[in-house]
Image (cartoon, rainbow, N blue to C red; front, side, top):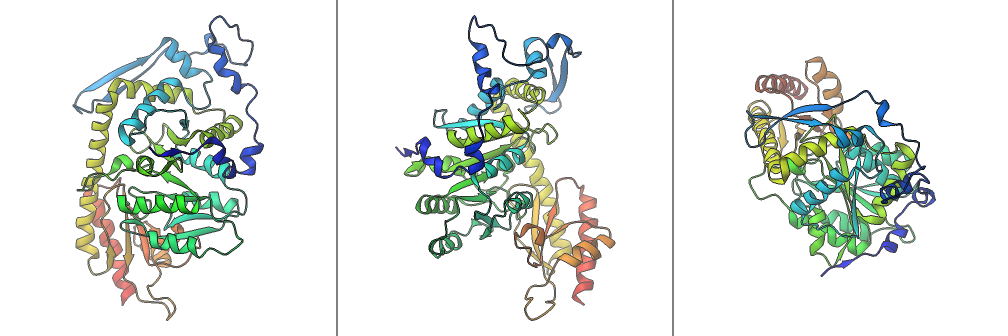
Length: 437
């Protein structure tokens, strides 16, 4: 049996901000209101009798039969719960379902050493986790290229972002090991590594189990936590079996408790419903709760109730059937984009087809601008020439913390129809051909 890291282990990882944040004097007592026979004079909750809503009804496609729709109506106590202030960590019905999901998907049985909390999308809980762990000026390890949405989080803390190389198989463990083994003496090592291991935004890569295990071993050896940002976990469509998550794999390690995992329902239920959740060591997740209690009190009770109603009506098997349908939808989109890439950019770009997610990461074969610029620069071509020719994408430099020049480009294939993909890459080809003259 692996050793479970004790709660006091995380004292060295919590930021000064997290340690100084006091529990909410009101929200901390909310659970006591459920005590039988207790009369609560605690919270300034508005009286539900004044709310004009009498029911909320929605229809949803059946995962087993997409042609069939089912209708759910939220009334009574469930509606009152959805219209009222609720627990900081999430409403009980949704949390219970998510605990079951983590057991089914990652073999993590519910226990006192780890917890789940719900956030307004995974971006919300990632931001709170960063502030709960990182002090201003502290270094962090980030896979490179890295999701552009986290770069400002670290920049505002004046954190030195130490880039760790990646390839089509995930984080290059030798690069990470070299960085840590050659770390300057007397300088504190990074406390966290940030990674998106499935269908990475922007590279589309999905890390292999072997790479993940190497990273877990390095986390133990060099004493850092892994921030596993995994919004594309259920969008895996590779031919091989889905690799196990860091959250699951750490059960095979000598110790458990170095992974803080972030999931999202944005890509599989609705991005606008804004439901994400954190799973990880209780001491860290509780620090996120304290931030929420101060910042926004809680995630919308109504969107949580709607989500819980849908998920409980489906059950886990139907939910997973739905995610399989979604992943195959994006596989079809990927295949269309791959065919168009082969047709229009063969010989003009280099790429590895993604096995998860919704992004292509490809290197334009451009002439070098100078002797020091060996691979060319996609920035000007994508921001100006390609845009002028009617196609919009992202130059790779926005995903590099140091903003260096690169010939890489990120393209999303999630929304476009086949004819639009063909025309977009045809227009991009024209721009590249012109630049190579």
